[in-house]
Image (cartoon, rainbow, N blue to C red; front, side):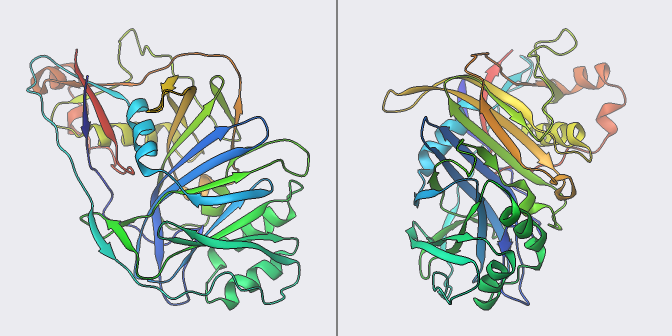
Length: 375
């Protein structure tokens, strides 16, 4: 199999929950990744997101279901390697010439003022730490009063109207969520794509048990419920002892065989595999919060350490994000792969006489890397 980097990022975005800009500006995120590493006493989660907008100074608020013990810069190369290892395999019809492409970001800079991390004595709000992680400046907060937390963010210049209901819900949650407020560090270079979207440095958070004494690997989807982005493309990875199950969101079983074929998704050779996958995920989800189990198997990193990796992909409308997704280690090891078959154009149109007239699937991904092979 030949690994190829395939760039297919959405050029348009609007406003997004979880990102809180100053009043009168906008910022949005339409693609994100989250890697959960499940341990016996703690969970480490690495987040990476892409944003666009006219706000040069904004916060990114994350909710964490346990006591935060560390915040640091995540390893972008490691995240890319995990994504590549679990990407769908693209099978080409032997009649199709092998084609591929790659895309790279260009370095740029975006200055912004500071301001987070100053405790102003707000009711029920405690600043537990501040620091820098790559080009991100962060503040960790514990909050027992949603109004106090909202006031803290508002008084630091950020409009939390889009995420107010989510803040209320997390503060009231019996797990005693903590929060990480992030902003891009002044003067630091950031990676941009051809459309001016910025790929943030990965942010790694380690945390312990919630108020119930248990560890919870929760993807805080409710922060994005009020977003005006049409849909958000998300890749979620879990490293554990076995296959990770998902709750809260629906997850149709990946049978690895569809209608007697050895592929899950089929399309003509002139279609971008990103578009085919995103169109498949869009149709799968509809108006619901649904994730597709793209891949499970043993993953060995560059240091030779092996763990079981589970990957879920989604393309979900913000209005469907009324509940968070939570991952649990089943300890059972079941291998799953997703295969996209690119069929020769005339053969595809003969087999699918009406399908080729349909519009191409939506594209949008943090950056789908392609594992390519011939059928």
